[in-house]
Image 1 (cartoon, rainbow, N blue to C red):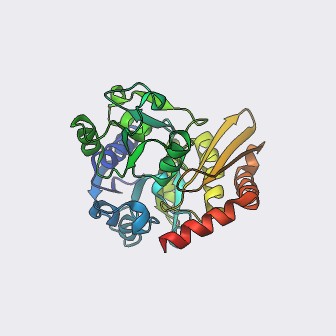
Image 2 (cartoon, rainbow, N blue to C red; image 1 turned 90 degrees about the horizontal axis):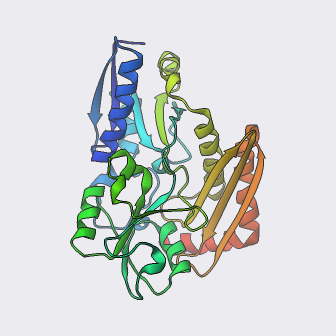
Length: 310
């Protein structure tokens, strides 16, 4: 392992916290290595007054970091895998998937213990079309409003009474030491998570085999298998932030079980199904499940969503 490394990261508190964890793990495993964080502002960090679905979605939080990686300005990048497009720039790959944090969405409220307890017309904040569609299917009587900004900003808006409740990824709250703010984690049966939610990805240059070997101790194969199944599902659907889709894989012994959904934005029509198979076929299972949902009406839903966002 070389004596100095530069990690490219977004400048948000959560991104820096995630990258600092990777930095600490590397320095503990390789005491001779000094690791520096290089903070990079991405397009997604600059645009805070427009819903992600209206901006375009793909690569909003990674492109500038990938440019720095390709230019040799950083040696590796740490991403939230749910932000990473399925197609990566030539010369780069996600070489390491560390152990996954909780994949579930978190319900936060200072007034109610559960979504079912919210009164009619209550205001709930989320920036995700996937969450919106599932919320509207559960509670069409709720007032769902876009919520952007970093986690501190979102929590402040909740505490100031701008929202009766908000939905955030549980992983981010756990990593920031804010788990006590979670009213309840939403099981996948109630709210299917985003593809790869809770997983980190370490992106490397393909020709940097030495660094890949040096970081392999961080790789968690069960998490990588689950991510592979979910991202294969996403690849076939050509989805991004502007599309209400979700997928979640679990492992049991030598079997991977994948559940996926395609939803209309208003939640009136949600197509959901599951498929299981051997671990070594994780990506193939993701593709097959996507084909199943497309054939059951998912294609028409996605075509309508893409047309509306064009």
